[in-house]
Image (cartoon, rainbow, N blue to C red):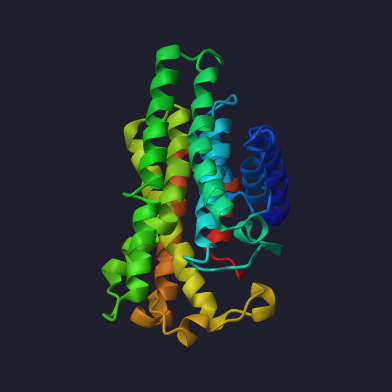
Length: 305
């Protein structure tokens, strides 16, 4: 399997799905709609909707009921980036080679674009109810699955998920106290892993997986998210600047505490390997065709950029 070729092919498919759910740029609110679409069409690997789609397929899911949630997930991820880029947060002027939303549309409109993407994400996800009476599955089961998926999406994106992690991250940056492992893992779990968890859990839920299987996907996604962040810390120390496309050593330069600074390089590498092995073992335990999903997970965790 040429994993990069497969990822690009699936990303192109997902890109078309996302485009199909974007709002039309018209009416008196046209500017905020343009800013929303500018933000979400800025590129990206579409990894969260890809994980959702592949988990859905792993559990035998068929039909298009997952697609509104795939688009919604990317909207939520994008809104978080729009707000992260604001002067009040990271004050970034470029993302993925393009000017950030607040640079193009102004700070106020960027705030509204982020708010718009978050709200429109749930409006989009609820369109899955329109698919509840197809594909030969009991209507009641479908409605229950969509409702449960919405609960997961809301929690993992909110104060007990991504926003909670971002809050802890901001406060850690301003704190004069050393960061503990517990705090660092909390930030990684909530800021990064939460949306990965939501993606894989929702894919399983919509495919009709049982409670234990959904919990297994939550654990698998936790491992992916934590390993992903530890690998980030590793690459900042030993990565190739030309491959990464950004300078290395920024964490040390900014006196930022990371998994590597707390535990050392060897321990960090060992934990990435352990988390990776556990994640792929969970996928294997499901059965079915999980080869691409396993390869995708390994590619994410052991990437060089």
